Length: 171
Image 1 (cartoon, rainbow, N blue to C red):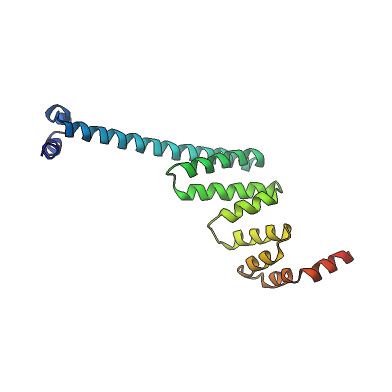
Image 2 (tube, rainbow, N blue to C red; image 1 turned 90 degrees about the vertical axis):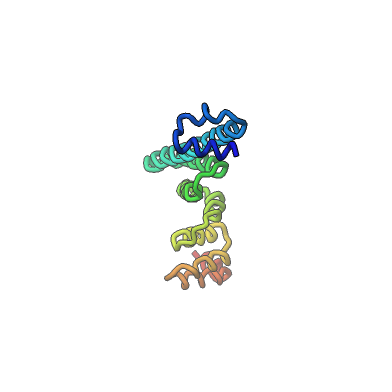
């Protein structure tokens, strides 16, 4: 009842809530409110940090400093994974990490990071197929390319790797 009274008083005069409702329920109410506000602020700060790290990474990326960008993107991904940051920020960081690894020719790591992406766009599928072929995973490259429009002939070429290797040996 005292909590209901506090809410009624808070509606009529919110500034007198603490003075008029100095009961345990009012204290509990104010403590809960404070905890909620602190949690909300920490979530916003985490999102701001992730956004800031992504922005710094983008600047390095645009300046063709892929190793520096990679460090920022990895920090953003780690922070986004640990906080209540929207999953789109985490996905964005993962895609940028994969791109940095691709551009620095670290194909093993790029393969892992492109595999973490939930997007199945043609561009991502094509890049994953390229990486699979570079790493000698021709059957996987073929299956990935079959889902990309216009690349079925190339996908079939990966299925016959023995003939491809024999032909390559002639060069």
